[in-house]
Length: 302
Image (cartoon, rainbow, N blue to C red; front, side, top):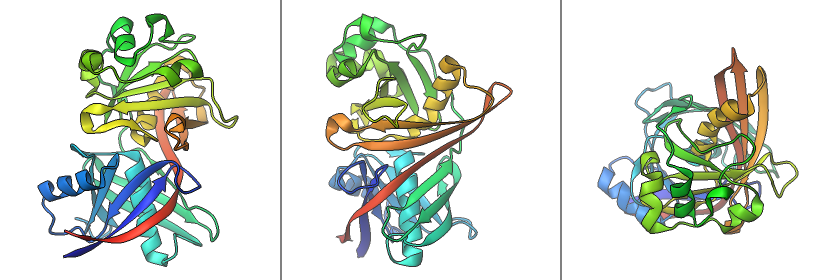
């Protein structure tokens, strides 16, 4: 059976940057094992499979796979799948459209607003379906530093210390001293599980020093255990990062907006928009947004 697919570069307004995503359409009839095999064939950080919605008022049910495993939620597949479905409605890279796409994901229903204007990359944003919560205690700085090839004194800045949060996927959040330090970070396999096993092997590094003046944070994300040695842009990590900012930066009441730059060390610069609403010193709403560019369409014979 022939199945349509598209490749979108997500969290970027220009092609061949950001985080590439395979969107497999017409996915009805594929087994879980077949989806996993196809995701491994694409070998991107995530592949999303579009299925008929379980509730008729919704747009689609999607399943998200890394090369090694299925995820209940991820940010760049949510953005890319919604833009693809909006594109299907208007036939033209979501040009001149304002669409509300409701995606059924294993974490729950996600409402995504898509805005497209001819001659510009389409933009999508969504409220995260699960507000972040603590997901355990981080490893000691010595273990974290060893797993990243850094010195213990390079971990942390100001009052920021390592932490672990989950907004659908658990991450260890590792503040590092500056851009030079984060650029040197690498996976040291023999120490990785000891440092990051409690966060399912995912480490999100960040510093306040940035390359783009518009960015508030510079980030890298490593997840070798799910087949993603490094990810160019990680929306689910940005969602959980909102709790890190509330905790260490003591965000004010009301709405704060941040841009996170990621993927630069990989040669795939990306920008994730993070909007955080605080009420009563607690997170009330977290929104993730980003652009996407269509780079490929094809047919899958599987």
